Length: 428
Image 1 (tube, helix red, strand yellow):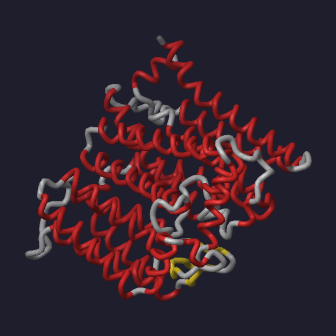
Image 2: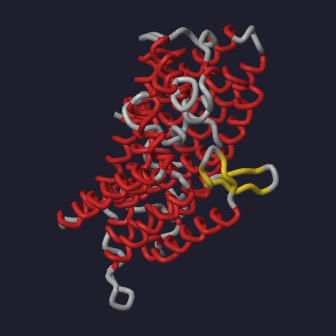
């Protein structure tokens, strides 16, 4: 049994090594035998194997979500190196290193602190402060005022706010927070904070994050609250807000009209989405091959439209592989949420998983013209420091929940080694 168990742990590492060797090997040939490709690929693979080895040796819970996330990062880095290795590829590797550190820091902090379910007010205040600071001092980039710049360093506070929002909701839906503030019940406070955040995002014109936050809220109401009138009230409010936004906000009108008929203004507002569709169609089932596509024709291909570049050079099957990996990550995370006995851990893991799933759906649906384009990044794949660091940090929290559940099922934690008892006996 232990032999089979050990082989199951090794299999994700073998697949990860094979994927990196194949992907960067093809890129090395396509890029005129540029030795820098080998350095980048080797460094990335070394980092992933180090992270995976630490997870295995330290008995850090689930053995599969991190390798699957690493596969997504690999596909993204390959495309970014293909677009511009110096400008995007190497920088993304640097952010992956920071993200790997954020993963273990988030894991350690969440695993060793036990009162997260009591801090709902800090999550609400922290998210509000980030919104206010962004509105006052933020920079407007690509039409959205959701960036803060400190010297040459630029980041998106809304990425951090998403985690704080999920933790805030988890406090209420896990029943950890039941005391009213004055005469205001927690249910109403949660509603007010949610719509206040949405109001801030409207001022920032960050429509993608609005969809993500509201989707998390609606899904958690659906799962945890049996008051269907309250659910329908929120769904109705969202529908009315969407109609009013389309009627009175020109920016939303342009987005919706471009989604309905991008060919009407193909040289201007419809240029991005039509180039995305051309790229996906030209890739066919198996793709044009790494290095043989034309991703530079798509504006912002390294961020919003990285999925289109994947489909062009790796084909529909390459795009399907990304979607399947996200499905598998969501499945493993939902499984962790179901198995854990702590109500707050359960609600938090569920909310973070919905965050990943909805962000993936929104961006993939946008670039394929399934839904209006909102301009957010594809987790683990798109270029961007804030996105990769926050995504890996969120995964670290889920990993900690998995480890705590595993410790509980294995009979507690050994005081000397810090390992579950069963893991310590296996090590002997």
